[in-house]
Length: 299
Image 1 (tube, rainbow, N blue to C red):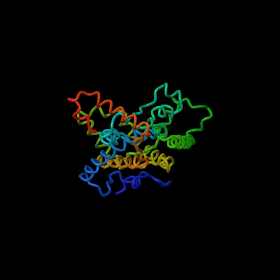
Image 2: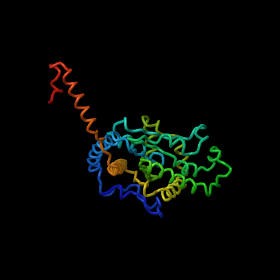
Image 3: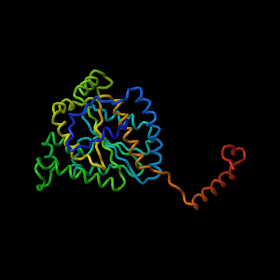
């Protein structure tokens, strides 16, 4: 089963309500567990090459309703990755200082440097989601008087986002966008678990209840966002998220495919550099007392 191809959003007629958030394809929990083990090994190997080569970067964007599993994706999918080569940024409501800049500014500063994988838990896409569902928030952004009215503002922002992502890709940062598609029934169940379990109370935000009341508005916003910004170079992947184990395997599969496509290599030294290393090795071995040469003297 080719998960990336199956889950990639391609149609300009895309609608979220046509997809089953409980979908699992031909996978079972048991086969998924085996697959995830292989994926983590592959991710480790590919990330090591990406980090050593330092020519490309990968930006993973996670979007979804509250309780859709974004934190779990980060924890499980990246569990086998070297922390030195992975940066995770969770975006909250913008600060007053951030509002003094354009909406892409704070995210652009956090894009991953070459050789690393960056993960955005929410992103600049909030500016066509939360702000669209709650247009009163635009007042705080102090937009120029020449900005279009809200009816046309979203189209402008979709274009800006497409241009921004093209800029990233053309400069070596692959953009992997995963939307975690959760059903309202599953969200309710996860909310109740957080409320009923004292060890998970901290996960529940009182604003989650308020935002749930806008479910339909968010679904429309998500659908249009995906239609307008899923491009060939930076496609959206719609991940059925009712089954946490499936969502984690799916995101890992997409990340592995992306890294395989980049195909990073360990840097190759020039002959002079290789000879210099041989000379250094020889000196290191010769400078050691014979009693400590057991593991170093292989000549």
